[in-house]
Length: 214
Image 1 (cartoon, rainbow, N blue to C red):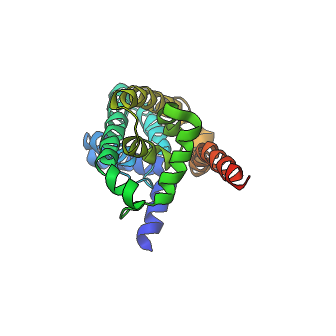
Image 2 (image 1 turned 45 degrees about the vertical axis):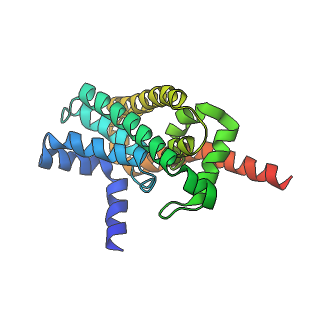
């Protein structure tokens, strides 16, 4: 229970914690943020890790001069692209097991089904659009690997999506993250990012369920 409480506190006050970690770990903060983004996008068992909010908070941190914005931009683009690529290959390796049994340990098949619904609607563009939808972001490359999407096609959309996603949130954090109104209400900003990010996924799920009913 204490772990959950601490995790929620970390998540909701990411800006303050990042500043503390930057002071405490120095240059290693680059590696820490890189690994979190890589794991959030690259491992299907860690969709709960902060993605959008962390990239936004990193932009705000860069605006204070604690980290270099260009270095962070390049690192996080690489982390996002490498993460999705890893996830694609994991899905490809587990393809037979998933298609045969519709079940695999540590992975909620419900999330796989929701992502498949997203793919049916948006096709290959899902790899780009999913970058902005928590949970589906983590499962989209995995499902692409399980499915029949050629790797070259996946890689093209992966690179475009990774660059757009990181650039958007890190720029927003850099230019707006340190405004007094944002700093004083950072928890609400995080909640807002989460809610807005979830809306496209929820709309797709609702539409899919309504079609199935009809």
